[in-house]
Amino acid sequence: MNRFENHTVLVTGGSSGIGLAAAKAYAREGARVVITGRDEKALADARAQLGSGTIALRNDAGSVEEAGRLAASLREQDIRLDAIFINAGVARFAPLSDVPESLWDDTFNANVKGPYFQIQALADLLRPGAAIVINGSINAHIGMPNSSVYAASKAALISLAKTLSAELLPRGARVNVVSPGPIATPLYGKLGMDPATQAATAAAIQGQIPLGRFGTAEELASTVLHLSAKESAFIVGSEIIVDGGMSNL
Image (tube, rainbow, N blue to C red):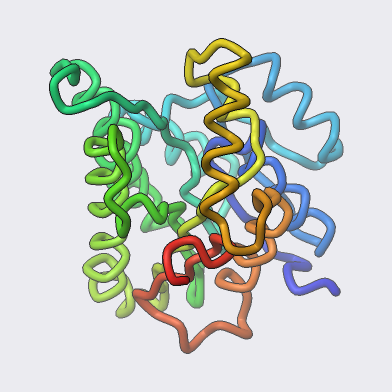
């Protein structure tokens, strides 16, 4: 399939995990891909995997200033966008009693404030019929202990998909959300757990998934592409949950 031939797509946080899987999937279907990330080496490695036509830009998704810089860089290169996957974000967990103000600020800057102003800055670069897909989370729907700040930030993103769709529809653009459950990505290695605790946590989570396994980044990417493609042109302001039945069964 070449659903994205002659299309340009932007994937924020596209240098690893779900973002990289989505970038690869877009590229396989003919898209010119722009990826962003904070780690120069990871960006270079991802670009090597995606091919020389890929544009890799260092960008802090939590910074309003850098949102403007990203839009300016694309505008200078005369790049217009057919799809955006707002994927970059952070996942930090702590019980209510241990949450410092800095964890709240860092999470909401990266997961809500940054994406909001990125969309604002990029809106004028969207082609008619463009799609924006936001990476949410089932944590916005389930009461998982220690996830209060992260879950609240993802709930805010799901709300934004509705209100921003209403605002952007006159420009011919639509906004939707893909909300993953437990996905096997490098994220779980970045939570500061020792190997034994990490393994025990993974086993406990897996036991709550009706399908009995973690999802893959590629499975989530396929839903991102579906929401980005013309085949889903009648899906607006909606959320697709990809969690192996965890939040429903």
